[in-house]
Length: 92
Image (cartoon, rainbow, N blue to C red; front, side, top):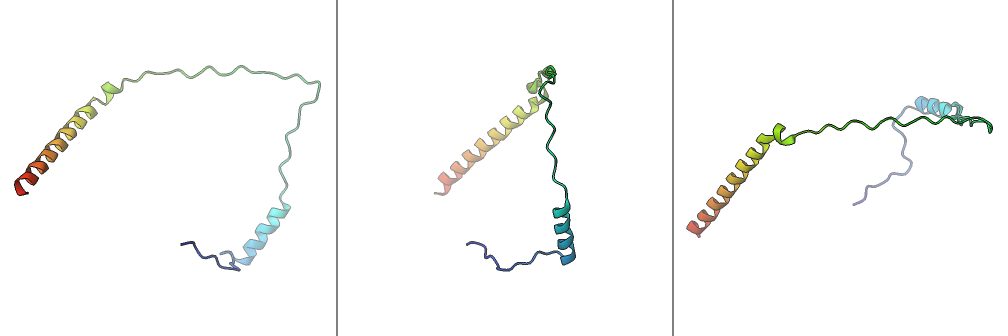
């Protein structure tokens, strides 16, 4: 269900804060455009920075224990599944 909208909602701020915000919004200067280069000026092109160096990481050496843990969890889940099937056959 859609949310009801109330007509004539008032903001949850004191009136003096609202007035100050409105005057600041009206009196604040707008950002100026960036100046463009004159028609006869030279353009200097800088070379791009070299690409970052890549470092090879051997994840198997750092996280070798994870594979052993996954195998242990998989074996445990298969054992529980077999136990459930056996219990179902015995009770059914």
